Amino acid sequence: MKDNITCKGFSSVLIINSGILWPALVLVMTLNVFGQDSKKVTARITTWYQNKPGAVSVSFDDASYSQHTAAYPILEKLGIKATFSIVGEWVGEAPAFSAEPGSMEIKKMGWPQLLELYDQGHELAAHGYTHEKYDKLMPVPNLVEEMNKIKTLIESRIQTKVYTMNYPYSYASGNIPIAAEEAGYLFGRTGLDTVNPSSPGNMYLLATHVILNETSPDSVIFQNWLDQAKGNWLILMYHHLFEEGSKEMEIIRSHDVVNSYSLSPFQFEKQMKSLVSVNYWVAPVSTIGKYITERDNTEIRVIRTKKKIYINTFTNLNKNVYNHPLTIEVELPWKKVSVQGSLNDGIFTTEERKLYIDAYPEKQIVITKESY
Picture 1 (cartoon, rainbow, N blue to C red):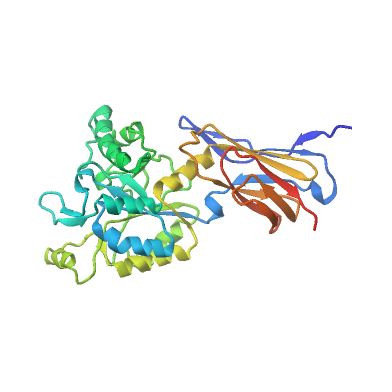
Picture 2: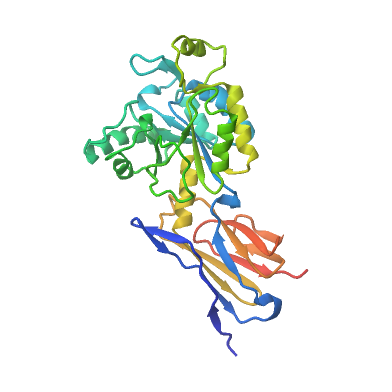
């Protein structure tokens, strides 16, 4: 006799197509079973990778040499991968001093330092070919041409696509975000002073909290930013790391500069340790942005038999671009199971009948009931 297949439930996942939010069905079908095994099976993509409670990106502007000498060792020690943005006319084959006319010259990284960062898993992002605000009234094709200068330069060095634009002076208005999209960027970071929701309304207008100096933010405000990131996406913006007794800090103090956009390595490490302690997902801008886009554009279908659960994910996204694994939470009636098709296959004992699985989109996962 054939078993009947019945629909058990739907999810509240959203699919975004052409700017419209559509409810995506998570279809759960089961073969009729009885007893304890008749408990409902559900599956959902967690808000953040590995079911972390929030997400944070650490980003740097201007490619200051101090980012390589001071920030980079701290990031590596704490296991943090960040986003470093490049001004085209300021980067050469070796570190060199540069600045806008009339401003203090600061030593910038050369390509050897930037490529080392990239090779270690950090993101290289665009910050304009020149460090000047884009003209919001400029026709979109002209803005696209300007934005492609820095994109093409970086891509010629790393041999892969650049997806993040950290707008010069964090300024994005008028035609600027439209041009960023047409130029092939996927994400644009602005100076909007807040925390991003888990599904930002516009990926080309991402908000940022900026570090202004050694005491702004102070520890209370910084912790408040971290608290606000629970369930959300916080992007932090840094510039320079200068020691208190350095020549650069002496010049800054002599000119009574309040917002120096610099802080000491000691203060930076203190902030990064606070960040690590909250156990959020910390990753570059494009990494978190891709996960959000995949999560919001992926449909889950679950088919259950007496001893197996089949989980299939479907998306129309370009998987050569959107290729970050998703974390799927499965609630199931069995305590001991085996998993195949994920990034963490094996035999597991579930906690409170829940299992968290990391898998690439459109990769079938098979969960099998195991005997005790």
